Length: 151
Image 1 (cartoon, rainbow, N blue to C red):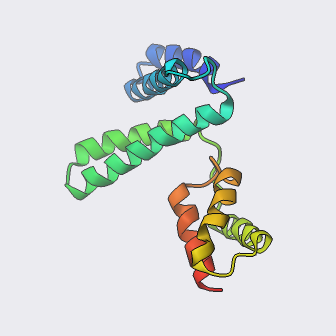
Image 2 (image 1 turned 60 degrees about the vertical axis):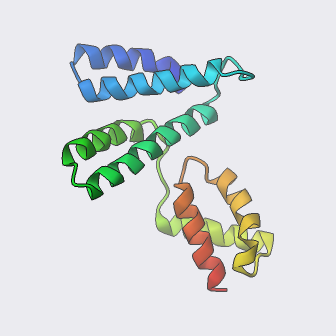
């Protein structure tokens, strides 16, 4: 079952339970899905990978806003972003641990035969596809950079 089909039910449940945070976040997801479906040249249906990518983008936007608001001392706005991040996180696949990430990336580096940080692009291309939805892109890049610089 795709995420999109379960959203309508989840929105109704959030309305009935008067959960404003969840309702606001689910409506944002629904809107993003609708925008993606109706974009020029887009297929009128989203597969699960596309849905997860959209939710990851929404999560990333909330995370960036949370960090900015926290730095500026706007705890009220930071709290709102954090609440929405928590709801979005329930729709994302479980993130892999740092140890698992390092082990997978070491395997990719061996497979590609990368020997220096200048070959980071080769590793990132494969790693991004393989770990899509399972790890944050900036975390993947930082780990790859660290591993390649230690060779």
